Length: 377
Image (cartoon, rainbow, N blue to C red; front, side, top):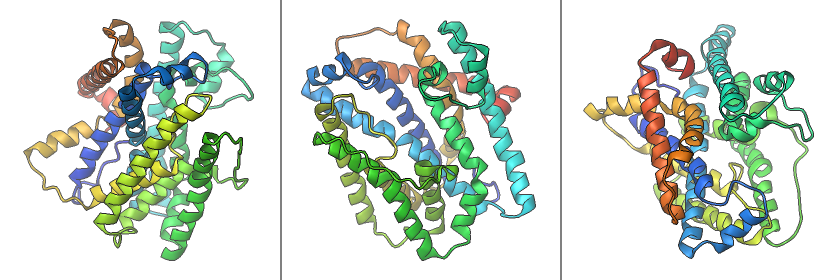
């Protein structure tokens, strides 16, 4: 989440701003489920959306979509800064695994252990030794095997997702660097069809009351599936893949994609039996994030005295991501609750984000935390 630009190259400060905003969007996403009815599957939780005021219905739908934009930006950033700088040689691959993958794996495993201590100790959720070991190894026994860690620490789905992408990064690099440009475009079109258009159409059919579940049997999860598509597009954008697309079209794509995503989010809770929370495989989320990312890529920001603070702040992104949800759980009981869902949302949002930022900033001054827990140099 905090891939850094090589010091020998010109740093694109605009992406530091994007990292900061993206992390704030992630906290928005997780704060929303505290104040609004998106955290459960059905029943009274689903009915409560209908009972909300018109303002809260629209506001929560906008915040839900905005919150879902954060993680795709991080996947796009990973592709942008990793793929085209990856040395597809034996030494390059070994160096990547040693300096990137295994360091990241160590950081995540340390946090998984802390999560286990938090869930078993602070939250008093019981679990056997075998279950704990399986969770630390990112193994799930299906079907219906209880995974309290994953259901409580809702942010950890990102950990195996990004580890899988890093593990097969040489494959992604080979796809981007060693095939002709027109085939790259067709590859993205096919992947978007399977991983974004089909899931989005399935949801639209559910809005119409039709239980249509269409999926592709082509399995390429080893390169990240939908998340891998974001990474690939990030690498292609760095190559100039969208350079011929006009700013006007990008702004139109951002606005139209965002509005349609909000409409889907709103209609999902009105039309579907279960509560609906738009996911990263939504086609309109993809369009919106890619368009915004390309627009940010075109921004030219000169380094100033403020830039150093911004770069430092952006470097805390991964630490904030990993620590914010446990903090959110702990402080919920101490936050004042009002009759306004929106007020409760903002109180939880800023309390969680600012406290997470303060803790990460303080601990990053200690080398062991900075290096092993926050994946900083």
